[in-house]
Length: 226
Image (cartoon, rainbow, N blue to C red; front, side, top):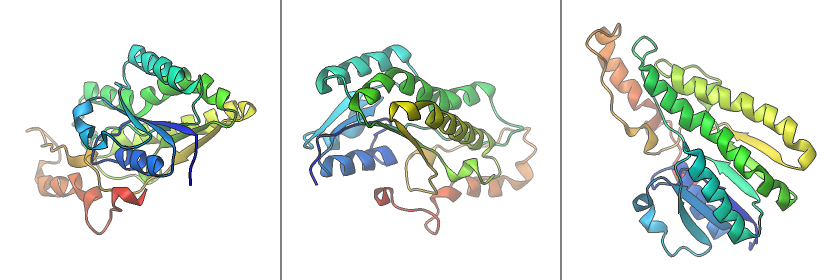
């Protein structure tokens, strides 16, 4: 299938869902803007037909606006798909969390999506049939121990998406929240240890298993299932 439609995807570093989506969209003939915070993480995408890599820190509104202007210049002021995929994980007991870490996670998983939509909505309207796709998680519906912060960020994202869908319907923009299950990726590979005063030290081995549970071979789908 060939297509002249354009798509911007956040969080396209190698080893994640965004990277796989960028390759898949390009293979279908879309003009792909694959964004990453560090271009060295996607050197394998260099030379892919129809795919352009842009450096984007989704937590920086000024950089988002610069990216919007650059995309608008290259597409004639239009964008067909905005895929908000960039995300971060945080698997920590609620009684051990660091509030600064919590704020950073919400900045990536929720507030950056709000900023991206605000800045790109006029390009989506100009396409005449725009789509906003937000990468949610089954964790927003099914509570898992030590995942309260991540789960809450994805639940908030789902609620935001439902409201956004109603507000943008008159502009012929459809909003889709993907409820993803366990997918093999690098986001969950950060290792953590319980603090010395944690209430959960007696089950530290169970906590260790929980850190990698979402990447268990019996649970996950390969990222290219997307």
